[in-house]
Image 1 (cartoon, one colour):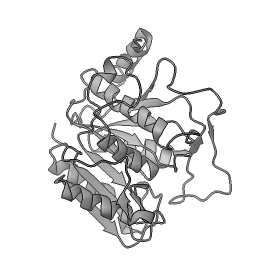
Image 2 (tube, one colour):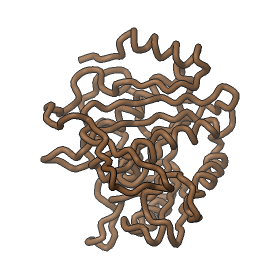
Image 3 (cartoon, one colour):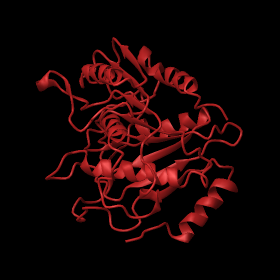
Length: 301
């Protein structure tokens, strides 16, 4: 079965990314045919945030639920700053919802400010019954990375400068992609599934589910770290309810495998702050991440 983007979609994207100054976000359906395993029984996609739910840094958060039609939205880097680097952004939400602005659109806008193209992944939630909670999202993130790499030339992206950045459950998803890229977890469809879906680097911000507490914080079995796991940047706080051990033990496993890694552990700051600035030092993590990326040569034109 061969599936590709309709010519009209590609033409619209090309127009938007050239005539509009390469700064207008453009959304694409991730799967242009049937979405693997979907039965159409999830319900209407909706922002589930209630008026009584807390804000982050004084601002509301979009908590998108019932996602059954995944998309990628390209936020092209400004022409005058473009480094050729791109980052696939995976919002968190416990594999139940997606924090689409806090850990999605706002992150892509920050990436643009440092000359990086942001690619926002709207992956399937909530977790489907009868399988691992990350199963459908892993299909989506593998497809998305391959899609970006296959379209790199068209989208002004350097094919070996494509990373992944995730928050909370999205951090686990980014780690899962970092260690599950040799084979697709779905039947390949087209040219996008023939190129590598290995990210060139990974940024994990307050990641969840990396270890199993009941097993002495052993690395989760789906995260089979090897020497080929990409360079990784991690951030977590000691008062994070998800537990700082997620990042600590994952970092140690990376070092044991001789994978380049950088860990920032802060005493306080909790969970779910995105990159909204507060009086907590941890919310300055984007500065450290930018310098880490610079050190890898990712911010050179």
